[in-house]
Image 1: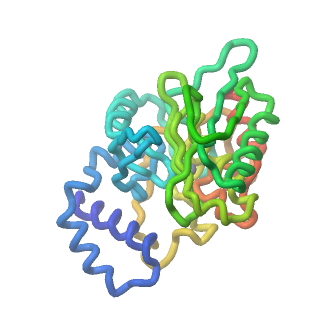
Image 2: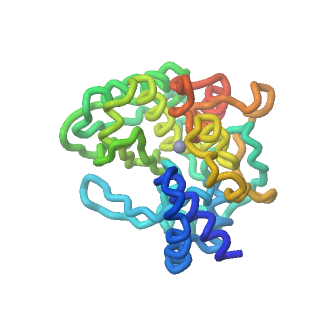
Amino acid sequence: MKKLKSITIGTIAMALLCMSCQSDEKETLNASEKDETARLSNSMVTKLWNLSLNPNYAERYSFETPEGKVSEGWKIEDVFITDAQLESNSANVQVQENPDNGKLYRVFNRVNVPNQGQRTLRIRGISLLPNIQEGLRRAIANYNNAGLKIKFQVTFGNGFTNEDIILYQIENNSLSAIATSPANGNPGRWMEISNGSNRFNINRIEALLTHELGHSLGLRHSDFGGINSCIEAGVVGGPFDQGLRDPAPANTFSVHIPGTDSNFDSPVRSVMMACSKDLNPPIKELTPEDLIALRWLF
Ligand SMILES: [Zn+2]
């Protein structure tokens, strides 16, 4: 079973990287069998599911901050979790929910907000290209107009000090970003965005950054079990993928946000759908379901 899982993950990674090179598939499978130590063990797979992270899309990742500090861990789609966080966060899982694509989920570590008044979170955008800057402004406005106790305040420049969230560019051609999760009552501090994102339509950049800020505040993918939005968007679901993905086990533990359920269109539309930025049109603004979730949390 362990080997089967490792092959599955390797195959999907290959499919995502190279949709057209079918003849190379066998070689890749052999390589991933040899490289099993770098793959997820069964217990890691369970831990990821328990944290509303889909292990089918997990890859090893070295996350480097602008200060040059490197953390080793797993990148699951656009969320990074360190090895230490995976261990500690999955050690005390209590709430049971089935991921049915119709709800919104959160992490266990909440961002603290005051009982009364507001909390301002300062975001620093480091050396951002112009469209990425504008996308961030629009994403922030989405949250600041949502009637939450949390407000975002952004500055741009070349360096940073003690701001709460640091957004910086990495070299990559795609429209993509990687967020981190809250810790110690604070939002996920580090957020990488591909510099190639600047070339994309501003609506899609806004969708991307609205989504990433959701992760930073502690939201997980609303469709993490089946990533149906990615299938709808055509990002996954090709011949490699059919039947190869392991579904979320029935006993997956996830923290469902109360009030977000099938009273809305099914499947629920959310900026936290795994491929919200890839849909046509992209989901760039908080949906009624997102507002229920955010207002319950903050
Ligand atoms: Zn995401």
